[in-house]
Length: 377
Ligand SMILES: Cc1cc2nc3c(=O)[nH]c(=O)nc-3n(C[C@H](O)[C@H](O)[C@H](O)COP(=O)(O)OP(=O)(O)OC[C@H]3O[C@@H](n4cnc5c(N)ncnc54)[C@H](O)[C@@H]3O)c2cc1C
Image (cartoon, rainbow, N blue to C red; front, top):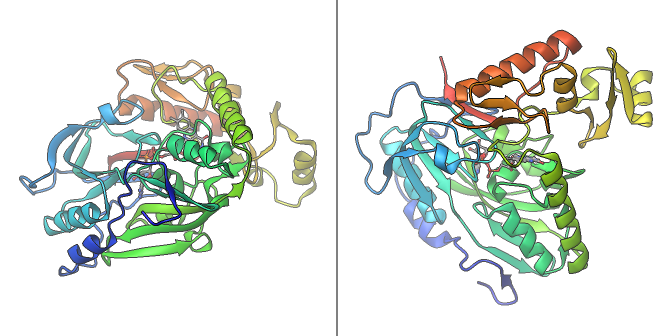
C-alpha cells in the first residue's frame, strides 16, 4: 500500500506486475465471456473440457446467489487478484469454455440448468482512502465500501446505504437509488479486456454510464477489476446517519424477509408515454403526478422522469400472485420473491404474466432489470 493512503481492507489485491507477466501468452482475440445485456445466453451443452485443474466442478449456484435459485456451475473459480483473472481467462480460452462473472449475485436469476462453463467469482478485495479519493477492488461489497467512506468522512456514496452487491456489479449496471447513481462519483474504472487480454483504465465519460447501464454492459468482454471514486469531505456522523436512514427505508419498503434479486423490472420513463417537451410531459414533471388510463401515478426522477414499475404491476391486480414457490410481493410489487423452493421457470412465468397484463392494461412494455441466465435457442 502506498504511503499516505489508509486501508479499510486487510489486503489490497491488485497485483499488476504478476498479472502482466502472466498475460505474455499467445493472445486469442475472442472473448470467452457470455454476451449479455439483460439476457445472458447460456450455452446449451456443457463445455467439452472434462476437467480444469484448480477449478471446482459442479458447484451449486443457488447457495451463493441472493435468489437461492438456479442449477450448478460446471466449473467454478474464485479470483482474488488480477493475476487470477488473467490466468483463469487464459485457461477458459484454451479449452473453449464460456465464462460468466459473478459478483455478489444480488441481481441475478440463474436458470434451473445452471451454467455450462466457468463461473468466475470476483473476490478482489481491499479499499484505500487517500485524500478525497477512494479506491476499491471489484469484489468489495457496497456495504464495506460505504462503511469505509464514512470512516474517512468521505461523502458522495451515502445514497447507497443498504444497497446489496459488489462494486463490480454496481459499476456494470450503474446501480442507483434515492436520486444517486454510482456514476456520480466515479473517477476511473479499471478492467480486463478478455479479447485483447489487456488491462484498461477508463475515466467516467469513457464508461458511458446510462440508466442502469454502462459500457461494460453494452459491450461485454471486459471484467471490472476495481474503481476509484472522487468523494467530498463531509461529517462522519452525518454520513453514517444517511446510510442508516436509507438502510432503514429499505427494511420497511422491501420484502427483505425473502430471497430476491431486487426490482425485477426497470421503472418506465415518462418519455415512453408522452413525447418529451410535450405539454402533458411537462405537466406531469411539474406536478410530480400523472393520471393515466384511470390510474394515478407519482412521477419521480430516477434519474430521468419515470413512473414506478411496482405501481403498474399493483394496478394490474397482480400483488400476491404465485407460481409454485415464486410470489409477486404484496410489500413491493416489483419484487418476485422466493417464498420457498422457487425455480427459475416459476419466476420467468410470473415475469411473462406481469409483462402481458401491464401491456394489456397500460400499453407499456416492462423491461427486465434483473440479469437472466438461461439457455438460448
Ligand atoms: C433487496 C435488493 C434491493 C436492491 N436494490 C437496488 C437498488 O436500489 N438499486 C439498484 O441499482 N439495484 C438494486 N438491487 C440490485 C443489485 O443489488 C444491484 O444491481 C447490484 O449492483 C448488483 O451487484 P452484484 O455484485 O450482486 O452483481 P451480480 O448480481 O453478481 O451480477 C450482476 C451482473 O453484473 C455482472 N458483473 C458482476 N461483477 C462484475 C465484474 N466485476 N465485472 C464485470 N461484470 C460483472 C454479472 O456478470 C451480471 O451480469 C437490489 C437487489 C436486492 C436483492
